[in-house]
Image: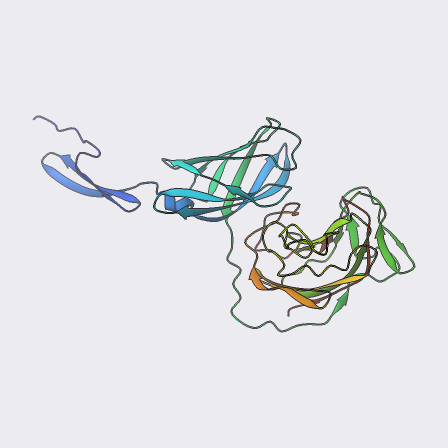
Length: 324
């Protein structure tokens, strides 16, 4: 008896994200559905962990559809701000894009190559210096809260005496004198031992001329402290911004050598920033982690951390009120 060979795709009808095919065998037809890769599967926000020679480094990617067929996006490396991606090239489940260097020491573009997997995305990152690192990513959580938060008891994170409850990210340069917490020179960041989910936090700080620091919420989202000009047009990387993402609606800095305040409320991804008594960011969504984040595990609680790797900075009150 003459046997018929099965021919995949002999009579295939393309459908969204799949192909429906008729397979012939001994005069019998069988209908099967074969999963096809759809560029839309890449659209969304991704929390990425990069393996830098055994050390985990956080990154973040958002992919959007521009028009009918072009994929664009934003990318956050382990440092720097969110950077626009002009085009994400996608073919048969694999994708690639490049972005110019920002604070990196090399001159070449960063190259990100990846592919869709059953559990998310994965690939290789080539740095501006030519180093290659493997990475994996998962869909970022929405972090949508359904109810109004009920606030718990306020916690004084700084006791005015010592570094109890804090740890440095490396060799410690932070000191306490006359009730003031000071990083006198660029060095390590300072991180709370406690971790928090949703909260309100009050911070009083002072910087010198040219100062640059930040308060990281859950260790992932930086509220920028910087000696920005009082007449500067607001920008997401200037005073009061959520670094690289959200811009203050006005410049309310008091300038160097003045005690200033942040009152920040973070519920899920929604943040409100009151600086020096004025609401400059009102219940806006933080899309993803900012450069310098401790990790990319956005669904988990995280610490408060104070940036100490730039210029001298002082703090005198840090009071947090967690949600119950």
